[in-house]
Length: 400
Image 1: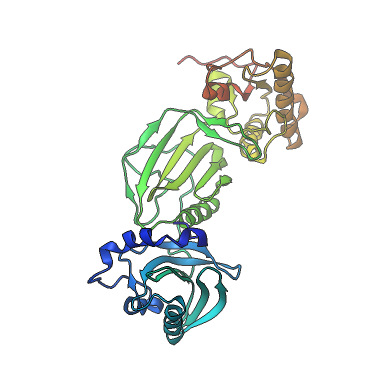
Image 2 (image 1 turned 180 degrees about the vertical axis):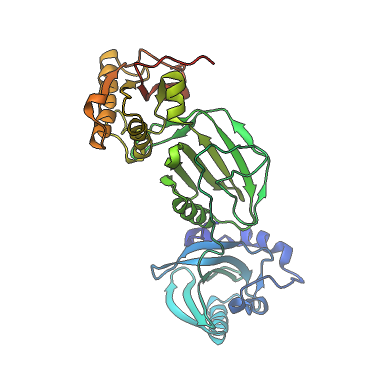
Protein backbone atom coordinates (compact mmCIF):
# COMPACT_ATOMS: atom_id res chain seq x y z
CA UNK A 1 0.00 0.00 0.00
CA UNK A 2 1.38 3.41 -0.92
CA UNK A 3 2.01 5.88 1.89
CA UNK A 4 -0.46 8.76 2.15
CA UNK A 5 0.61 12.13 0.82
CA UNK A 6 -0.60 15.12 2.79
CA UNK A 7 -3.15 16.14 0.16
CA UNK A 8 -4.56 12.59 0.13
CA UNK A 9 -4.38 12.20 3.86
CA UNK A 10 -6.61 15.13 4.86
CA UNK A 11 -9.99 13.70 3.98
CA UNK A 12 -13.08 15.89 4.08
CA UNK A 13 -15.05 15.42 7.31
CA UNK A 14 -18.01 13.80 5.52
CA UNK A 15 -15.73 11.14 4.05
CA UNK A 16 -14.01 10.56 7.35
CA UNK A 17 -17.38 10.14 9.07
CA UNK A 18 -18.26 7.34 6.67
CA UNK A 19 -14.96 5.63 7.43
CA UNK A 20 -15.60 5.91 11.15
CA UNK A 21 -19.29 5.02 11.16
CA UNK A 22 -18.76 1.36 11.91
CA UNK A 23 -16.52 2.07 14.87
CA UNK A 24 -17.75 5.30 16.43
CA UNK A 25 -19.57 3.56 19.25
CA UNK A 26 -18.57 0.69 21.53
CA UNK A 27 -15.35 0.30 19.55
CA UNK A 28 -13.05 -2.63 20.34
CA UNK A 29 -9.31 -1.87 20.56
CA UNK A 30 -7.45 -2.03 17.23
CA UNK A 31 -4.17 -3.87 16.73
CA UNK A 32 -1.37 -1.33 17.04
CA UNK A 33 2.37 -1.56 17.68
CA UNK A 34 3.24 -1.35 21.38
CA UNK A 35 4.68 2.16 21.06
CA UNK A 36 1.33 3.43 19.72
CA UNK A 37 -1.05 1.32 21.81
CA UNK A 38 -1.95 4.37 23.95
CA UNK A 39 -3.90 5.78 20.96
CA UNK A 40 -6.71 3.29 21.68
CA UNK A 41 -7.55 5.16 24.87
CA UNK A 42 -6.84 8.64 23.51
CA UNK A 43 -8.89 8.76 20.29
CA UNK A 44 -11.71 6.89 18.56
CA UNK A 45 -9.81 5.03 15.88
CA UNK A 46 -11.27 3.40 12.84
CA UNK A 47 -11.39 -0.37 13.40
CA UNK A 48 -9.79 -1.38 10.11
CA UNK A 49 -6.30 0.06 10.00
CA UNK A 50 -4.45 -0.34 6.69
CA UNK A 51 -1.24 -2.22 7.41
CA UNK A 52 1.79 -3.24 5.33
CA UNK A 53 4.41 -5.76 6.41
CA UNK A 54 7.04 -3.66 4.68
CA UNK A 55 6.65 -0.25 3.09
CA UNK A 56 8.36 3.11 2.75
CA UNK A 57 7.03 6.39 4.10
CA UNK A 58 8.35 9.86 3.39
CA UNK A 59 8.36 12.33 6.26
CA UNK A 60 8.22 16.15 6.57
CA UNK A 61 11.95 16.41 7.35
CA UNK A 62 12.75 14.96 3.91
CA UNK A 63 13.74 11.50 5.13
CA UNK A 64 12.25 8.18 4.06
CA UNK A 65 12.00 5.16 6.33
CA UNK A 66 11.15 1.52 5.63
CA UNK A 67 9.52 -1.09 7.82
CA UNK A 68 6.11 -2.09 9.16
CA UNK A 69 3.59 0.53 8.08
CA UNK A 70 0.24 1.73 9.45
CA UNK A 71 -2.24 4.44 8.39
CA UNK A 72 -4.66 5.43 11.17
CA UNK A 73 -7.73 7.66 11.07
CA UNK A 74 -9.67 8.72 14.16
CA UNK A 75 -11.66 11.37 16.01
CA UNK A 76 -10.32 13.25 19.02
CA UNK A 77 -13.26 13.35 21.46
CA UNK A 78 -14.14 16.14 23.87
CA UNK A 79 -13.10 19.18 21.84
CA UNK A 80 -13.34 20.80 18.44
CA UNK A 81 -10.51 23.22 19.18
CA UNK A 82 -7.45 22.27 17.10
CA UNK A 83 -4.93 23.74 19.54
CA UNK A 84 -6.46 22.02 22.58
CA UNK A 85 -6.74 18.74 20.68
CA UNK A 86 -3.15 18.92 19.56
CA UNK A 87 -1.93 19.78 23.07
CA UNK A 88 -3.63 16.65 24.41
CA UNK A 89 -2.28 14.43 21.64
CA UNK A 90 1.28 15.78 21.80
CA UNK A 91 1.41 15.39 25.58
CA UNK A 92 0.34 11.76 25.24
CA UNK A 93 2.98 11.04 22.60
CA UNK A 94 5.74 12.64 24.68
CA UNK A 95 4.60 10.82 27.81
CA UNK A 96 4.89 7.54 25.89
CA UNK A 97 8.46 8.12 24.73
CA UNK A 98 8.04 10.08 21.49
CA UNK A 99 10.13 13.13 20.52
CA UNK A 100 9.14 15.98 18.21
CA UNK A 101 11.27 16.21 15.04
CA UNK A 102 9.47 18.78 12.86
CA UNK A 103 6.32 20.90 13.18
CA UNK A 104 4.22 22.38 10.37
CA UNK A 105 1.38 24.82 10.98
CA UNK A 106 -0.46 25.43 7.71
CA UNK A 107 -4.21 24.84 7.53
CA UNK A 108 -4.01 22.56 10.55
CA UNK A 109 -1.44 20.90 12.79
CA UNK A 110 1.17 18.60 11.33
CA UNK A 111 3.97 17.02 13.35
CA UNK A 112 6.70 14.48 12.73
CA UNK A 113 7.82 12.53 15.80
CA UNK A 114 10.31 9.74 16.42
CA UNK A 115 10.62 6.93 18.94
CA UNK A 116 13.68 4.98 20.08
CA UNK A 117 13.30 2.58 23.00
CA UNK A 118 13.98 -1.09 23.71
CA UNK A 119 15.51 -1.66 20.30
CA UNK A 120 12.52 -0.17 18.46
CA UNK A 121 12.95 2.70 16.01
CA UNK A 122 9.71 4.28 14.83
CA UNK A 123 8.46 7.45 13.16
CA UNK A 124 5.05 9.06 12.74
CA UNK A 125 3.46 11.93 10.88
CA UNK A 126 0.43 13.30 12.75
CA UNK A 127 -2.17 15.56 11.10
CA UNK A 128 -5.06 17.18 13.00
CA UNK A 129 -7.87 19.23 11.46
CA UNK A 130 -11.62 19.57 10.99
CA UNK A 131 -14.81 19.76 13.00
CA UNK A 132 -15.25 17.32 14.65
CA UNK A 133 -11.53 17.03 15.19
CA UNK A 134 -9.87 14.34 13.07
CA UNK A 135 -6.44 12.80 13.57
CA UNK A 136 -4.46 11.10 10.81
CA UNK A 137 -1.37 9.12 11.79
CA UNK A 138 1.06 7.49 9.39
CA UNK A 139 3.55 5.27 11.21
CA UNK A 140 6.64 3.27 10.29
CA UNK A 141 8.34 0.84 12.65
CA UNK A 142 11.78 0.53 11.14
CA UNK A 143 13.30 -2.78 10.23
CA UNK A 144 14.34 -5.13 7.42
CA UNK A 145 11.86 -7.03 5.23
CA UNK A 146 9.97 -9.63 7.31
CA UNK A 147 11.34 -12.46 5.19
CA UNK A 148 13.85 -13.20 2.48
CA UNK A 149 13.29 -15.49 -0.47
CA UNK A 150 15.67 -18.13 -1.82
CA UNK A 151 15.18 -19.34 -5.39
CA UNK A 152 16.63 -22.41 -7.04
CA UNK A 153 18.49 -21.64 -10.24
CA UNK A 154 17.04 -23.23 -13.39
CA UNK A 155 18.67 -26.56 -14.24
CA UNK A 156 20.70 -27.36 -17.36
CA UNK A 157 17.87 -29.57 -18.63
CA UNK A 158 14.41 -27.99 -18.98
CA UNK A 159 12.13 -28.75 -16.06
CA UNK A 160 8.64 -30.15 -16.42
CA UNK A 161 6.29 -27.19 -15.92
CA UNK A 162 2.62 -27.60 -14.95
CA UNK A 163 -0.11 -24.98 -14.65
CA UNK A 164 -1.18 -26.77 -11.46
CA UNK A 165 2.07 -26.42 -9.51
CA UNK A 166 4.58 -23.74 -8.58
CA UNK A 167 7.44 -23.01 -10.95
CA UNK A 168 10.47 -25.09 -9.85
CA UNK A 169 12.77 -22.06 -10.03
CA UNK A 170 10.32 -19.28 -9.10
CA UNK A 171 8.86 -20.16 -5.72
CA UNK A 172 6.00 -18.08 -4.25
CA UNK A 173 6.52 -15.78 -1.29
CA UNK A 174 6.00 -17.34 2.17
CA UNK A 175 2.33 -17.51 3.13
CA UNK A 176 1.02 -17.16 -0.43
CA UNK A 177 -2.17 -18.87 -1.57
CA UNK A 178 -2.06 -20.09 -5.16
CA UNK A 179 -4.72 -19.84 -7.82
CA UNK A 180 -4.92 -22.16 -10.81
CA UNK A 181 -2.37 -21.35 -13.49
CA UNK A 182 -2.97 -20.99 -17.17
CA UNK A 183 -1.13 -21.06 -20.48
CA UNK A 184 -0.72 -17.67 -22.11
CA UNK A 185 -0.52 -18.36 -25.85
CA UNK A 186 0.45 -14.79 -26.68
CA UNK A 187 4.05 -13.80 -27.30
CA UNK A 188 6.13 -12.78 -24.29
CA UNK A 189 6.92 -9.12 -24.90
CA UNK A 190 9.59 -6.90 -23.34
CA UNK A 191 10.01 -3.19 -23.89
CA UNK A 192 13.75 -2.43 -23.95
CA UNK A 193 14.99 0.52 -21.96
CA UNK A 194 14.74 3.84 -23.78
CA UNK A 195 12.26 2.37 -26.27
CA UNK A 196 8.52 2.68 -26.66
CA UNK A 197 8.24 -0.46 -28.79
CA UNK A 198 7.76 -3.89 -27.22
CA UNK A 199 9.77 -6.77 -28.66
CA UNK A 200 9.05 -10.50 -28.59
CA UNK A 201 11.52 -12.56 -26.57
CA UNK A 202 9.60 -15.86 -26.37
CA UNK A 203 6.60 -17.29 -28.26
CA UNK A 204 4.34 -18.05 -25.26
CA UNK A 205 4.26 -18.45 -21.50
CA UNK A 206 2.60 -19.83 -18.38
CA UNK A 207 1.06 -17.63 -15.67
CA UNK A 208 0.58 -18.44 -11.97
CA UNK A 209 -1.28 -16.09 -9.59
CA UNK A 210 -1.15 -15.83 -5.80
CA UNK A 211 -2.84 -14.02 -2.90
CA UNK A 212 -0.84 -12.74 0.07
CA UNK A 213 -2.49 -10.53 2.73
CA UNK A 214 -0.62 -7.37 3.77
CA UNK A 215 1.85 -7.68 0.90
CA UNK A 216 3.10 -4.31 -0.34
CA UNK A 217 4.59 -3.52 -3.72
CA UNK A 218 7.89 -2.60 -2.03
CA UNK A 219 8.11 -5.94 -0.21
CA UNK A 220 7.18 -7.80 -3.39
CA UNK A 221 9.81 -6.10 -5.54
CA UNK A 222 12.50 -6.16 -2.82
CA UNK A 223 12.12 -9.89 -2.09
CA UNK A 224 12.00 -11.08 -5.68
CA UNK A 225 14.61 -8.73 -7.09
CA UNK A 226 17.10 -9.81 -4.45
CA UNK A 227 16.34 -13.52 -4.85
CA UNK A 228 16.41 -13.44 -8.67
CA UNK A 229 19.78 -11.70 -8.70
CA UNK A 230 21.29 -14.23 -6.27
CA UNK A 231 19.97 -17.12 -8.41
CA UNK A 232 21.72 -15.80 -11.51
CA UNK A 233 18.94 -13.92 -13.26
CA UNK A 234 19.50 -10.55 -14.94
CA UNK A 235 17.02 -7.83 -14.04
CA UNK A 236 15.93 -6.29 -17.34
CA UNK A 237 13.35 -3.81 -16.06
CA UNK A 238 11.93 -3.13 -12.63
CA UNK A 239 9.31 -0.67 -11.45
CA UNK A 240 7.36 0.10 -8.32
CA UNK A 241 5.32 -3.10 -8.63
CA UNK A 242 6.85 -5.23 -11.38
CA UNK A 243 10.03 -6.99 -12.50
CA UNK A 244 11.23 -8.33 -15.85
CA UNK A 245 14.12 -10.79 -15.56
CA UNK A 246 16.10 -13.02 -17.91
CA UNK A 247 18.09 -16.23 -17.25
CA UNK A 248 20.75 -17.29 -19.77
CA UNK A 249 23.09 -19.57 -17.83
CA UNK A 250 23.53 -23.33 -18.50
CA UNK A 251 22.32 -22.90 -22.08
CA UNK A 252 18.86 -21.76 -20.94
CA UNK A 253 16.89 -18.79 -22.27
CA UNK A 254 14.09 -18.09 -19.79
CA UNK A 255 12.11 -14.91 -19.24
CA UNK A 256 9.88 -13.95 -16.36
CA UNK A 257 7.52 -11.10 -15.62
CA UNK A 258 6.33 -10.61 -12.04
CA UNK A 259 3.65 -8.05 -11.19
CA UNK A 260 1.94 -7.05 -7.95
CA UNK A 261 -1.54 -5.59 -7.64
CA UNK A 262 -4.98 -5.99 -6.11
CA UNK A 263 -3.83 -7.81 -2.98
CA UNK A 264 -1.87 -10.44 -4.88
CA UNK A 265 0.67 -11.04 -7.58
CA UNK A 266 1.27 -13.01 -10.76
CA UNK A 267 4.35 -14.73 -12.19
CA UNK A 268 4.64 -15.32 -15.91
CA UNK A 269 7.39 -17.57 -17.24
CA UNK A 270 8.43 -18.15 -20.85
CA UNK A 271 11.15 -20.55 -21.96
CA UNK A 272 12.47 -19.49 -25.37
CA UNK A 273 14.08 -22.91 -25.82
CA UNK A 274 17.56 -24.14 -26.65
CA UNK A 275 19.46 -22.45 -29.48
CA UNK A 276 21.64 -25.50 -30.07
CA UNK A 277 18.64 -27.85 -30.26
CA UNK A 278 16.81 -25.60 -32.71
CA UNK A 279 19.93 -25.11 -34.83
CA UNK A 280 20.59 -28.86 -35.02
CA UNK A 281 16.99 -29.70 -35.91
CA UNK A 282 15.91 -26.91 -38.24
CA UNK A 283 19.32 -25.47 -39.26
CA UNK A 284 18.43 -22.03 -37.95
CA UNK A 285 17.43 -20.41 -34.66
CA UNK A 286 15.82 -17.10 -33.80
CA UNK A 287 17.83 -15.17 -31.22
CA UNK A 288 14.97 -14.31 -28.87
CA UNK A 289 16.21 -11.75 -26.38
CA UNK A 290 18.67 -10.02 -28.69
CA UNK A 291 17.30 -6.48 -28.49
CA UNK A 292 18.26 -3.21 -30.15
CA UNK A 293 17.65 0.47 -29.55
CA UNK A 294 14.49 1.65 -31.30
CA UNK A 295 14.97 1.79 -35.09
CA UNK A 296 18.73 1.38 -34.64
CA UNK A 297 21.33 -1.36 -34.87
CA UNK A 298 22.76 -0.63 -31.41
CA UNK A 299 22.59 -3.75 -29.26
CA UNK A 300 21.10 -3.44 -25.78
CA UNK A 301 23.15 -4.85 -22.91
CA UNK A 302 20.40 -7.36 -22.10
CA UNK A 303 21.34 -9.14 -25.36
CA UNK A 304 24.69 -10.32 -23.97
CA UNK A 305 23.35 -13.49 -22.36
CA UNK A 306 21.88 -14.89 -25.58
CA UNK A 307 24.89 -13.85 -27.64
CA UNK A 308 27.17 -15.61 -25.15
CA UNK A 309 25.18 -18.77 -25.88
CA UNK A 310 25.83 -18.36 -29.61
CA UNK A 311 29.54 -17.95 -28.89
CA UNK A 312 29.37 -21.09 -26.75
CA UNK A 313 27.80 -23.10 -29.58
CA UNK A 314 30.60 -22.04 -31.93
CA UNK A 315 33.24 -22.82 -29.31
CA UNK A 316 31.83 -26.33 -28.84
CA UNK A 317 31.93 -27.13 -32.57
CA UNK A 318 35.10 -25.81 -34.19
CA UNK A 319 33.88 -26.76 -37.69
CA UNK A 320 30.62 -24.82 -37.47
CA UNK A 321 30.16 -21.69 -39.56
CA UNK A 322 27.09 -19.50 -39.29
CA UNK A 323 25.26 -16.85 -41.21
CA UNK A 324 23.77 -14.09 -39.06
CA UNK A 325 20.48 -13.01 -40.61
CA UNK A 326 18.59 -9.77 -39.98
CA UNK A 327 14.82 -9.46 -40.52
CA UNK A 328 12.33 -6.60 -40.09
CA UNK A 329 8.58 -6.06 -40.09
CA UNK A 330 6.82 -4.26 -42.94
CA UNK A 331 6.80 -0.78 -41.37
CA UNK A 332 8.83 1.57 -43.54
CA UNK A 333 9.98 1.34 -47.14
CA UNK A 334 11.96 -1.52 -48.64
CA UNK A 335 15.28 0.32 -48.73
CA UNK A 336 15.03 1.40 -45.08
CA UNK A 337 14.17 -2.12 -43.89
CA UNK A 338 16.93 -3.68 -45.95
CA UNK A 339 19.51 -1.30 -44.52
CA UNK A 340 18.30 -1.80 -40.94
CA UNK A 341 18.26 -5.61 -41.22
CA UNK A 342 21.82 -5.64 -42.59
CA UNK A 343 23.06 -3.28 -39.89
CA UNK A 344 21.52 -5.37 -37.10
CA UNK A 345 22.93 -8.61 -38.48
CA UNK A 346 26.35 -6.97 -38.76
CA UNK A 347 26.12 -5.70 -35.15
CA UNK A 348 25.53 -9.27 -33.93
CA UNK A 349 28.42 -10.59 -35.99
CA UNK A 350 30.67 -7.82 -34.68
CA UNK A 351 29.73 -8.64 -31.08
CA UNK A 352 30.62 -12.29 -31.65
CA UNK A 353 34.01 -11.53 -33.24
CA UNK A 354 34.76 -9.16 -30.36
CA UNK A 355 34.05 -12.01 -27.95
CA UNK A 356 36.39 -14.63 -29.35
CA UNK A 357 34.73 -15.98 -32.50
CA UNK A 358 36.98 -16.02 -35.59
CA UNK A 359 35.69 -13.68 -38.28
CA UNK A 360 36.05 -16.33 -41.01
CA UNK A 361 33.42 -18.48 -39.26
CA UNK A 362 30.71 -15.83 -39.66
CA UNK A 363 28.88 -14.02 -42.43
CA UNK A 364 25.95 -11.66 -42.21
CA UNK A 365 23.02 -10.84 -44.45
CA UNK A 366 19.96 -8.62 -44.23
CA UNK A 367 16.65 -9.84 -45.60
CA UNK A 368 14.59 -6.76 -44.79
CA UNK A 369 10.89 -7.60 -44.70
CA UNK A 370 11.03 -10.37 -47.31
CA UNK A 371 10.81 -13.35 -44.94
CA UNK A 372 8.03 -12.75 -42.39
CA UNK A 373 7.14 -15.54 -39.98
CA UNK A 374 3.88 -13.95 -38.78
CA UNK A 375 1.10 -11.59 -39.82
CA UNK A 376 2.37 -8.03 -40.13
CA UNK A 377 -1.17 -6.81 -39.50
CA UNK A 378 -0.81 -7.11 -35.69
CA UNK A 379 1.64 -5.72 -33.15
CA UNK A 380 2.53 -9.25 -32.04
CA UNK A 381 3.05 -10.40 -35.62
CA UNK A 382 5.32 -7.48 -36.40
CA UNK A 383 7.30 -8.17 -33.21
CA UNK A 384 7.83 -11.77 -34.33
CA UNK A 385 9.08 -10.56 -37.70
CA UNK A 386 11.61 -8.14 -36.15
CA UNK A 387 14.29 -10.66 -35.37
CA UNK A 388 17.87 -11.82 -35.85
CA UNK A 389 18.51 -15.48 -36.63
CA UNK A 390 21.57 -17.68 -36.95
CA UNK A 391 21.65 -20.27 -39.73
CA UNK A 392 23.97 -23.12 -40.67
CA UNK A 393 24.23 -23.10 -44.49
CA UNK A 394 25.71 -26.62 -44.54
CA UNK A 395 22.92 -28.15 -42.47
CA UNK A 396 20.05 -30.32 -43.66
CA UNK A 397 16.85 -29.98 -41.61
CA UNK A 398 15.85 -33.13 -39.74
CA UNK A 399 12.47 -34.72 -40.45
CA UNK A 400 9.90 -34.54 -37.64
